[in-house]
Image 1: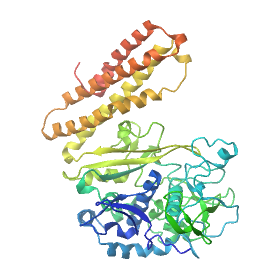
Image 2: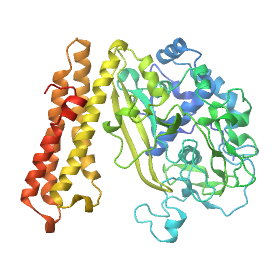
Image 3: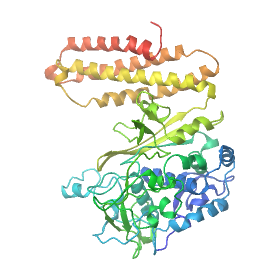
Image 4: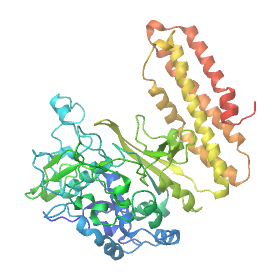
Length: 523
């Protein structure tokens, strides 16, 4: 099957008029003035996350701006489809999904193993052990048996980009299994086209080449590992792949899994994901372990990182989702825990203008080793602010988030004290309280952000805003305590203990630590 991902119209999109269609990658700026492409239109959220990274990677690899002036010019006036086509065609030879020769994100050589159902490309599909134990209770086997080329290509890219642990020798993605991705996206009609979503997450060429890896490595396999024999990673005869072994572009095109789609004899059928009819349906693939094993301090521009002894490690999604409790480390630096936002988020600070209301878009799989527990996705507001005010703005936000975290810790301990006489002997999951607290205070937090921005711009103090925030977190903590405290184990119920625990919660949340040390409020 001949199917080139640069030439074919395979990316589902929605235009401003509401019309949905499929376009080739270079057509994202088509009809930009009259009916621009607004968003992707795919049936699965993980496909949406994969395709936007595909487009960002393609633009970053082929047509990155030389400096900030060029970046800003292209944001306001994007390149024409023909100009993008010329740029993308420089790598067209690396984007053949089928046919003879190298295939997009697939093993260079044929693999001789038993074919597997195409559903195995989906990260949330039940694994072999789950099927063997008949434990596919929530995501059933057999729901996906064939895919059109568009969905197969997206599923393949999504797996290689997010690859979790898959058994002995089945390697994880360049950012580890299920990395968290954070992008800057438009927050208004002036900045919400698909082109602008892509361009907001592009780094100037020279800066990108300096992030990590070896920019002197410019051969095709250095950027696109499927363009040569796989750099395998068997225990005694294979090799690890470090940043020094690849071009920076491979951070977008990592290929940890050895896969070959069985598309040579594809037949006509209906895609089980998007529901479209296709002349060439893919129903099986072949895979083998010991693919590319990425090891070392890769600093991917689309992921936040924590640092241990100076070495960056990509952040991964965790149970409970992404809320403002993760503000420190996703939007601004978390100095206490050595976490830093993604490079593209840091670029937002240097690029912002007063007319750019933007958002942070965070998404990723919460993985438990090989099992996908949940797909999380959320947005947070990114408010434009003059540079001279940003330090004070971020200091205030950091203190409010840390105060909320302390209130959550107090809530959990006091509810446990209300429930049990000997709390140290009792173990259990109290995360439901934390999740409720963050959810109930999220709208208030974003309202506070807007008030804080206005106060700083008008030269007013922020004391009253921090006081209001303190009242909010205290009020919410008490409300959740009252809901939970009387629902403990009946055999341990003690009204007096509940009353004392409530008083202790009030005392802790009005303590010197929260009021003075964190929120800098007067006694």
